[in-house]
Image (cartoon, rainbow, N blue to C red; front, side):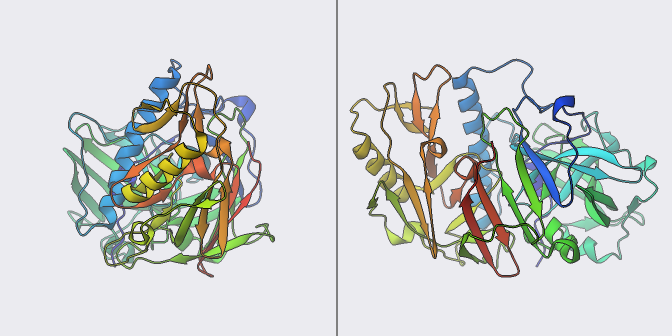
Length: 425
């Protein structure tokens, strides 16, 4: 089966060879990479002008919605990229790690994405790309893959104008072109020789973001597949809070050092989209009471793609309409505040202090109970509080705000994912 190499990438993300704040530029060790939030003080990508809380929430929601629509389209019968009228679908990065590419190494800041397989970077000489790019001419280990390479069959619509395996495709109203390439990629202190990635040469149009991504999916071109001997298709992360000023999250690669005391739920596989991390969500509790949700709203259905995925790139958890409405209504009943307002896509906001219940996601073999910090958005002044969940068109997505300050372990050989509370902010 061909992996969906580039479309997911283009919804995403950042990989810039810009420097970190020097105070944050701490060396990675062993197979552990530090993870920081894109808007933390450590990040070179934080906005030059601070946004108001409302602007920040509304912008994040708009970008998040684009990603959720795209993920939903991936599991539908047709893979159609929904482009909203007048809006660029450029998904901001959320969590970033350092990678060194080439010999001598060039440091790239790359967003980790569990729903993508590919690594992709803008390369020197690219027309229409970001001004910051990977300078492949300076790397003695860089090579462009030829058409005969097995990896060339794993990208959509490969072409061979010369000896290189190239791609040239339309994305929304834009076109992109590049070469399938290889180079040594070092994560923390682990070099991975001949790592395959897309080296972008040309973009035209407004809907292609100028950066790239590090894919942590299950497809043949993902980090897991390309580093199987090194990491045994096992990794975990702990994501710091959105508001964490510290460079303190971590991406832990390989089975060594993963938590021993942790509960797991089986990973499910959708044969049409084998890269996505599906899990079996069997119920949701608000407080101590199980919410009455139609079974079809959370059931895994490989023929339609319905079900629940764990995703590192979506910010706010989405539930399909019947499940969301049931959970939202149960939450409102527990809060017992009559004056409910809305903000953008959030329809359960309050302008007075509230006593919110916990929400528990019940998976086969594992329950994950979320405290208020994983459920509520608070305005800077503290005057507005919103339930940080929203409805989705076709797919339940357990997103990164709900994963913050948890260790999430992906054990692909044993087809399971584990979650345990861990403070990493």
